[in-house]
Length: 178
Image (cartoon, rainbow, N blue to C red; front, top):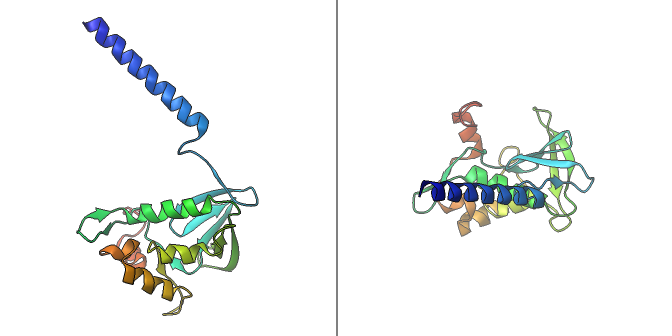
């Protein structure tokens, strides 16, 4: 009986190793994102990414921080920061991905309009889907209409309760889950 159990454990271990090797070979979950210029894209959170060595902040939006949680309509917590990050990754994985700088922020990031062949303004999509809020100087932003529509439709962040990303960052300085 003990020998049979050992054989079964070895077979399971072998099957897991084969499955892992197969997943690595075909690239599930590890596929690199490449920009149209061939450089590697590394999405850091829902509004920040690197293309090659250049750090970009997506123009006109403020997305939840990676470790930020929100509350849905039923009061349950959900990882809205992860959802925003995953959506930006999915958008940037499409053919023709790239970012056009518009300005530079105080952290030396390029503030840029990011796009793909199919999506001319990724920031607009993120706000429209409720995975980011409109961001601008004072109350001015190019995406206030999209934010109002997302709120009215209760999409993404607007489905329940959330703390605006700026307020969340202020309450959770770097090193505190940020």
